[in-house]
Length: 281
Image 1: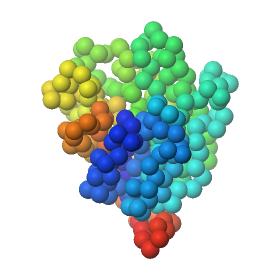
Image 2: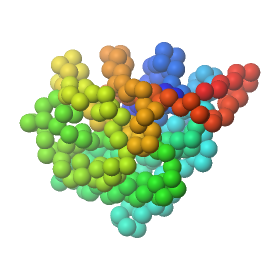
Image 3: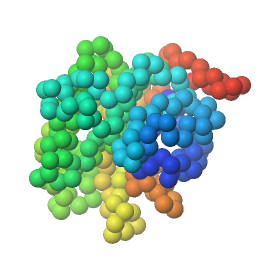
């Protein structure tokens, strides 16, 4: 089962690029972030024509997440559904569209777009830390149910200095502060593992390059897009790859896809019926 995550920075701007990438890579599940479109305006048809089911949770011009899957999703949840808002000072009425989850092929797929936080002195930073506390509580609930979890998305956090092209310059700042790393570790709690670091222990691997200052051309990037999986799935993990090629496209997203390949021989998925086209994984 090939599972991918990609912050596309506007689904409508990047639609042709995404469809082209899907045709090349053929993922079973694709988690998208920063779709930046309300649900009714999401371009469902191009994905459905390729045999995918599409679940979306979006808002105009900002944020927005989607799960695109060949395998029929079940138990779709949008947002935290009230988990721990009162504990962490985030009211559901003000919630931004940043999380969508579904049961797919025996795994709880949780797709997140973690707030950037702006700067450590900003109120947006407090929102980011509180949002991550909500995510930790949400994961606690899934753990109680005995769920196998795949947590994917744009985390806007470099977990270690290995994940920054110039840690001496950026360590301690936004996306690299100890507070953010601690908050991320509280989400993971040792129950989820970083798929990429199973295979690659060294620095020099990025998933995001700033649009400014020729960052991509100079390879000055960060690894802030991650796929975390339950420890119980580690024996099924065949690979984790960052596909940097789409960043060289014309008008690209500033992020690139990250994908894992899980060997699930006992998969218990369903069919997606798209007229006469059937897909079984």
